[in-house]
Structure formats: C-alpha cells, structure tokens
Length: 222
Image (cartoon, rainbow, N blue to C red; front, side, top):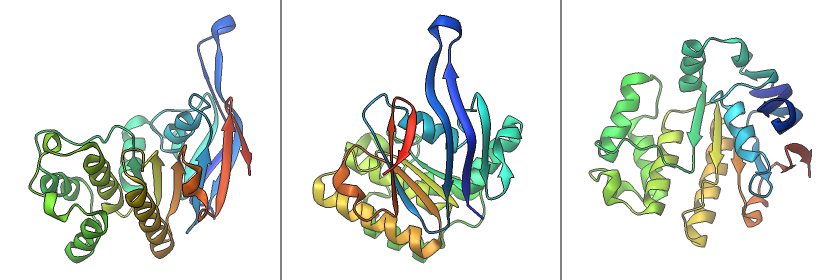
C-alpha cells in the first residue's frame, strides 16, 4: 500500500473567465522508502501540489490518502491531527517560532506529538545538519541557511511517514546542499518514509528514485 496517494486530484482558483487551473487532474503514488523529486519552473504548480499532498489546502476535485486515511474527507480539526502525526514539512519560509530558541522548538514538538526521535538520535541529526551548537540560539540570530537546516531538523524530528520539502536546499551552499540531500535520502531509506522534494536544482535529483516534472499544472513522469 502506498503511503501517499493522490487520486484524480485537480485544483482551480477563481471562476468563469478568471478561473485558473493550478493543477490539472493528477494521479500520484509514493511508496515506503521512495525519494521523489518534483521539478519545474516557477509558477508551474509545484507548491500547489505539495500543499495539497500535505493537506494544507483541499483540492477542487479528487482525494488525497495518507497511510490509508482519506485526508480530503476529514474536517479541518481531524485533518490537522493527521498532518501532525503523518507529515513533516520543510517549507521555504522556515516557520520557526520567533520567541523560542531551537531547543525549545523541539521541546514544543514533544508536547504536541508522541513518538518523536529519542535524544541520542536527535543529537545525531543535529550534528549531521551542523546545528548542534545553535540549540540555545533564537531564529533571529541565525543565517538563512541555518534557519533552513533547523527547519529540516524539525520536520525529521517527528518521525513522519511523509516528508514534503519545498526547495529544502535553497539557502545552502553547494557542499551543504549535497550533504543535506544525502542525509534526507538516508533517513528516507532507513525509516521507510516517503519523501517528496520540490527543487529547481536538477543536480540534486540524481539519487532520487523517481522524478516528475510539472509544467502549467500538469505532472509527467521523467
């Protein structure tokens, strides 16, 4: 059984002559242990795909299923609970709480969700991302690249079934970008998650199991 499925999903904005089809009818499956890249130009529908796949917005038509649960049919409260349990987001806006230091950000996750990484495993994650010395710092004290690495740590810390990453290496230099992609790949295989990475950087897709291109809202397998 696929961890993530999109069945005949379509998304439009507006109505009548002003209607925009942001995502044409799409069928998609992500299995355990798969690292999948989504590529395409700006405005092609990549972010729309990602937010629908993670339940942040609902499709106009079709259904999103995560681990057998039909997310699209759930009311927002239950959908939010399922998102918290199953999905780890790495968004371009790092979504860090400004008044909490990095250690406190992780402790907050422990208060709202069980079964997160054990302390030893979390320390290994911080070291892999090069943020172990930043745990006492606040987001305002971090560079863009450091905030991005912390956002990746937050997404992986909760042991999600699905990882959805929107340009996860955009603020990183080339060496760090390749290191981060190697780490994401390792966690995907080790924990048997389904990981979907939206990226402009085609250098990062060589080790992906599948690559899809989105152009004008239409997804094709490469």
